[in-house]
Length: 87
Image 1 (cartoon, helix red, strand yellow):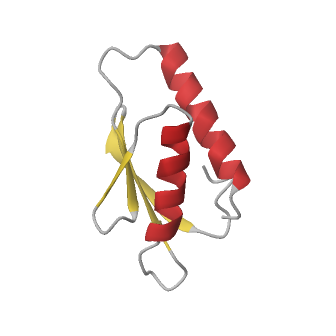
Image 2 (image 1 turned 60 degrees about the vertical axis):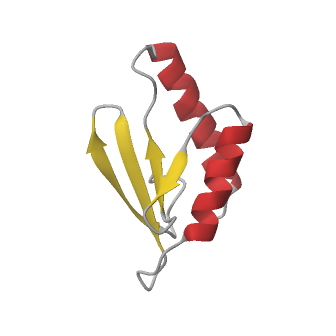
């Protein structure tokens, strides 16, 4: 995530596979436009995500039955989506 988000401030919170990634602008304002673009592109690629808070946070909560292959594929798709963005 840090490789692709050099210009954007973010924080990652969570335990286990349930994660929240919050994106902020330079002046600590919400970055809802960026989050919406990322979420919708991930959904188009087959990874279900949603946003929370003031639409500045991506929520990741995979099914309890997910296997390592599913996790690796989701991370690969997130990597692909983030590499398209100028973050």
